[in-house]
Image: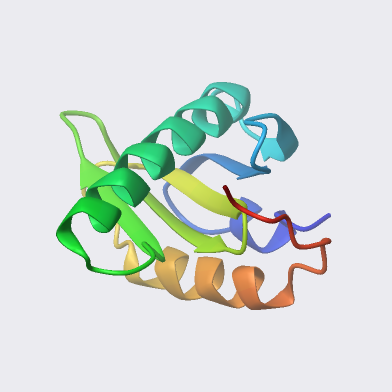
Length: 112
């Protein structure tokens, strides 16, 4: 399982690996499938913003809400992310996500 390293990290509630179609390739936790769908939406919005501002490809995104912190990284057309209990130290999750993104051995999809 690709997401296995995230399962043991303190504070991780859900994790997901999604492809460009928004379907979960793999998910973990009660909110994994919902996280997968939202990660695709978030990435599309950030990619659009990046194009308009001329900033290049978005490779990492994160946000904090009242209850959770979400961190995600991209590799090609794929996004891998984790939702964590608010107040959790996200540094280890961010490092783990970056390693997973490098290790993902999935076919690259051409982006439109």
